[in-house]
Length: 309
Image (cartoon, rainbow, N blue to C red; front, top):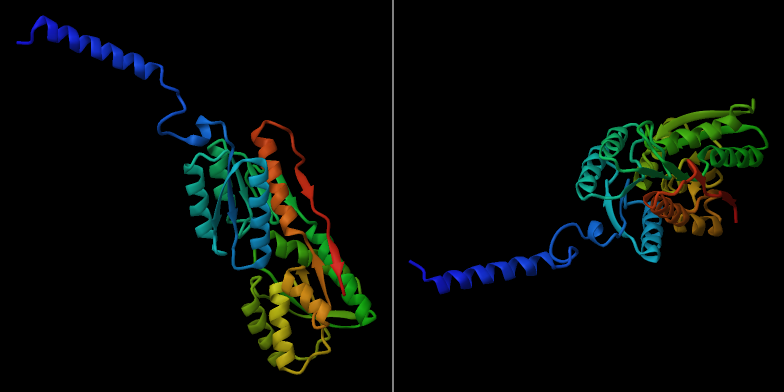
């Protein structure tokens, strides 16, 4: 049996320990640091990092997050809709404050956005929009306007007459739909212009090369190519050069470094210039404003330009 002295000592030490614990700072120890120190945590889900455009978009987002002192976690879907859904679910489990998403597929991403909605996490989309779910803000260039720029340039270069090939982006993506819509707004009104082939090449250079090779084999009677992005346009150029068809007008979209260099070299005729770094920056700015309870516009446009030299 313990003596009264030992019992008293144990009681004294126990009380002292409880007092020490009760006076410890609530921000010390484990737990979610972003919640403890008030830091905003943003999740950025990017469609792919195999495309220079989206690498630049991510870098713009990272630079802005560093500038604003917020935590940013980036996940890459590698152009796979199922991977994007899974990675967004992982971000939600990390208790992010705002989700910024660049959809791989505008329709497939809806379930992921609805999951974020159910978790009370606001959503911002960048470059590509979503077909559903609650999205607070969308940051992008006007893809319809860009498609019209490309269409007007091709019509002008052809003098209103000629055959045109269209290389489409990933089926189901808003960028592919909207750029194609803008392009057809122009060329379909020109009786002398005929779109003789429309095929998806999934925004990839290798696919642009393969698809263009196949089109050339089946029908080489065309005068111009509009590709929904620069990667496909550059792939198409390779196929055209290999076939000795160097007089075909080729127009891309995005103004990536490789595409601008090709325009300057005279091999690519034009590219519609987006500003992916600014899209990334504005996506983070919008997310921070939302996290701070501020109002933001539903659509935040980023200016376009046509580069021809």
